[in-house]
Length: 319
Picture 1 (tube, helix red, strand yellow):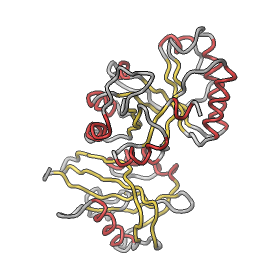
Picture 2 (picture 1 turned 90 degrees about the horizontal axis):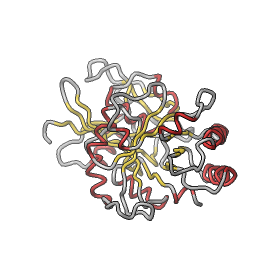
Picture 3 (picture 1 turned 90 degrees about the vertical axis):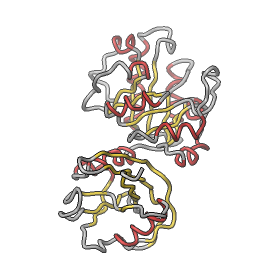
Picture 4 (picture 1 turned 180 degrees about the horizontal axis):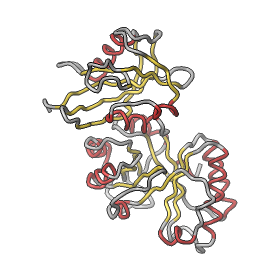
């Protein structure tokens, strides 16, 4: 669309796992705010070409390799921008402000301490999320549950959804111990823990002394909500664009969209495929994990389709 300003944006990480940000000149649009470097995509340019040119002009860096991170469309009072954000995987040179702008390397955990344009906030959310999202599956007993969760964490899982629904356990009383166990294992390894609990489980569990990071809701619950919990992360399962837009309206930190491919657990559900997945997330500006018949081998395909990464039960829980 001609009335949308398309911008190529670079998230550049150094060997200390810090990201490069720069200060906008005070007389620029959204001036005196920090931003991820980049610039307008010119007529006839691809996003990749614009990214390489802009970063060379702004920071004197040569980008050698990058991949999509997230696309963000944001409506300001005076313009609409679409940020095509890429994560830079390899570059040459030492960054400095060619145009006289301040440049800093900042740990991802400190980004929210800086003032950014509103359009940059989904980028920060995406940066704080990993590429793999484990959803817990079936287990024999508490020992089997702990073994599977520990194994997944040891295999690099940094984001866990503890899913306990009415079909998960014979006795609701067992849920308290499972949540406590998941909390301890995740805390020990600095893993983010999301709770996806049915109303029955929520009513039976005392969460007051349990450390966790947020709540995940199913799509049916999502559509009944008028607001989200504050002070905790919030994510949702989605199956259509309407649900994705609802998650965005509630300012969800991220969402899961499924099913991308057919699954053994829900063989009746029609798979959307990667093209439809990509089309459905185009109109939302939040990180979205792809779910449904996927594994670690699908992560690059997910990135190219605009996803944050891959969510899975069997691929991450059973191994």
